[in-house]
Length: 111
Image (tube, rainbow, N blue to C red; front, side):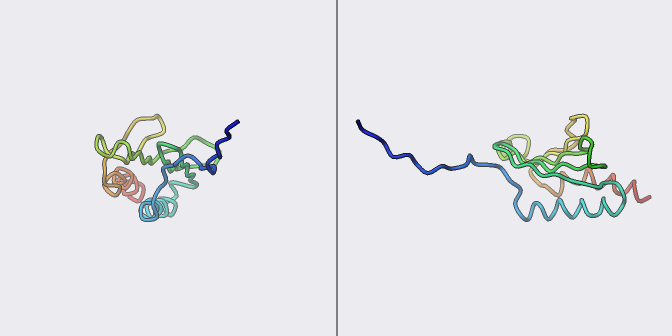
């Protein structure tokens, strides 16, 4: 009987936000918290997508989801902002440009 050695267990690869991407997202998050618009967030790292969810209150559905899907990098763009109803508000390859759709909401909140 020939027994093959088992390879060491490896977790499946996951998509995650890089430190520089998180810096941009958390900068916006901090400004929105200061304006009283957002109160909580959650981060999910899955096989095909990394999600930064923003909440007004802790126990509700997210107001917005900022998604990173590297497989769409050459198509619609790897970053997307998705509203509470599932509608894609903005998509592209430049994270700062994509997040501007949420910056506009900050400007309205301050006025």
